[in-house]
Each structure stands twice: as C-alpha cells, then as structure tokens.
Length: 111
Length: 187
Image (cartoon, rainbow over all chains, first blue to last red; front, side):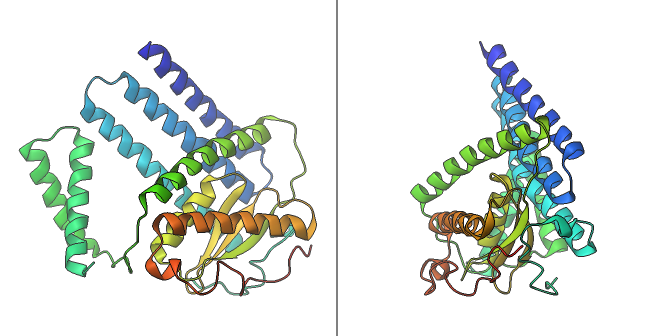
C-alpha cells in the first residue's frame, strides 16, 4: 500500500518535472519560461520528496526531505525572480511583446 | 526583537537545520551544527529583519492552504500550456503596491505570487513597497488588468493578515488605493 502511494506521488512529481522542461523549450519568451521553471517543478519536487518520505522507515530522513522541499520553496522563486529581472533590465525579456508594461513607467528601477 | 536575541534565534535555527540534514540527534551533530552556525553568523553578519511580524495562526493556516491549492492549479495550468497547442498569450507586467510592508512581508508575498497561477514577480521596489508582476495572460483590455491587480491585492491582504507587521495592519491607506501606477491597460 505504501509502495503504491509512494509510486503514484513520485511518478506524478516526475511528470510535472517533465512538463516543466517542455514548457522551458516551448514557451515564447524569458518571462513565460520562468513560469514553467517555477510552478510545476516546485510542486513536482514536493511530490517526489513526499513520495520518498512515505517509504522511509526512519523519521530522521524524512526531516531532511522536508528541509529539501522547504528550501526549494524559498529558493526557486528567488532564482526565477533574478533571471526575470536580469532579462528585463538587459532588454532580453521581449518587452515589446507585452500587452501592458507598468514597469516601463518607472524609468530606472533602483537596484 | 533586539539584534542580540535575533542572532541567538538564528543560531538556534541553523543548528536545528544542520541536525535535521544529518537526520539524527547526536552530541556530535548538535555541536558541529552549533559551530557551523556561529561561524556563519560571524562571517555573514545577517542584517536585522526589521519590525517583528505579528503572526496570526488561523490566517496563516488559511494562507498556507490557499497557497498549496494555488500551487496545484498553477502547475496544471502551466502543464496544459506546455503540452497543448500553442496559444496566443497576452502577457504583461502589472504593478501592485503594499503600503507599510516590511522587507520580510514583501519577500513572502513575492514568493507566493511567483508560485501561484499565471503570475511571476520580476521586479521589487522596496522603497515604495511595490512589486512588478509578470502575468502570463492579462486578459482583455483595462478590465483584465484591473481584475489582475485586484486579485494580487487580495493575495497581499491575505499575507498581511497572516503575518503582517503592526504597521502594515494598521496602515491608513487600504492596500494600493492610491499611488498605483496609472496607464491602466493601455496597449
């Protein structure tokens, strides 16, 4: 029973990671690619760690997995934010394609 | 929280993380973690986090649950877009202001926005507590932008309710009524 639950969780997580990779390739610009790089991969990693934790017999290892998930939640969006910001500032973000750009009104965003 | 006690809490937390990563509570792990934590605090000199957050457990629980649901929804949404046929997306960058928000609160909010459906924080102006958010699809015309901004404000309110500082809670301007960037929905 545990094995089945764990397998389902981990396979779903892996599928999400695959989808994130597909999104990275298929989305048109840096910003939308960052959407693909953050959401499904974060949830995917969460499912994989939970799936692994279900099979663990020792509590200590589950704590380590919990920390892995927690750090992903904190660091993933930060990385995406920094890449998106760098892309915007360098002009590589395909700003021209945006329907609205309220950031353009603020000519020089403070560092 | 004074600077001194803040550092003590940080050292305790770092030690706990260290022990958690090793997976068992032994004297060697605790002492090793303590040593690493002390060196880190000495070398990196973390800046104080500012005004203390007022954590409201029920609001925090609601925020976390809503956040998890949002994460699932946004993952499925991105999955559909990644796998399905190419669709024309009307993406844009919208600003939202969170008056009186501390750095900590802005960080949590920016993080939450990035992990929830269709939105991604690309720029932060801490001096005016303004987040610039990229949306995969802003919808049609000015109404779309306003709807998006309204939902971002709702998210900001949820974070303030969950863990806002006293200042953010009692701020005279209700979230973002004034001082928003104009140009609503101009193409």
